[in-house]
Length: 373
Ligand code: SF4
Ligand code: SF4
Image 1 (cartoon, rainbow, N blue to C red):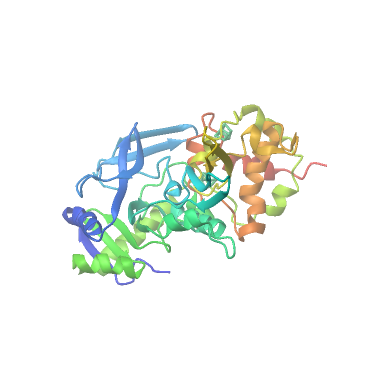
Image 2 (cartoon, rainbow, N blue to C red):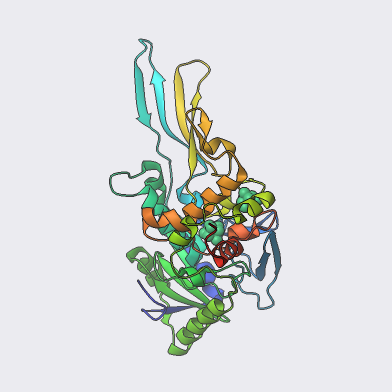
């Protein structure tokens, strides 16, 4: 783990494009924040000067609006709808292909993605924590997912401290933000006149070395530290710091599940934007000729009706059981699988839920009362 004070450099504001240019010179395709359909998403940056400036994201349950940042900062927006999940866990991709030759013999071959080294600029601490959870799932010992690993190993992560968390953020209470602590190649903290830079890997150190930056001053480092503390203190939503495993699992018949089910549309938006959700479906796509077939993986949601189908019946036939499955997996049984909660406090499921369902409010309602008898 590296901190803001470990060999920190200072990148003057006017030199931010030179960081992007240096990444490009090191052979990275650069992805960064881009304004698209009134939201900030990660897209390929055409040039080193393409980073948007002066945007903030106002977020509330069921609400996301971009506003102007009076200080004209580059990273004053809190997270957008898209985490970095698609860069490692592709929304749709082929896993293997089978071909039939003239004798009828079948040949199976893995399909691996053609990926080039990719630098993502503007990654938030919550998304680094989510990526670590995705790694734990897709790259666990003995069950390494070849497609995920191929994409993941090409990633270079330029993290940014969140100075302006949205009203939906609660990463401070999950212990995952707002200042990146680990999992990045380079970390930035934006000040009025430039960026504190810290290398988190040998790859990151090589890129920063090429920029020949002056060391950050103790005062600049202290300003960034205070900025992180203020951002954490500004967060009003929380999840309890203790594990919710037992309290949620003892409330599987709580009437609150009926109440939330009456509002939930089972649209799956929350799972699509969640950086830790990894459920997927697998489908076969045979060629009409019968000569070949591809086996593909596509993102799926536990809110979908088909997700609960098992051998002729549905184990989760109603929205109540699907919402309960999502929340109890994310916050309770995830502890059994991964040793921690599956929520990193990014708040996306709150902002992007069309009816504004707020998991922090649902947890508070579920756990406020005694276990119903
Ligand atoms: S459950 Fe919601 S707040 Fe938690 S990581 Fe997923 S999208 Fe973010
Ligand atoms: S909780 Fe909200 S986002 Fe999730 S499935 Fe229900 S309505 Fe959709």
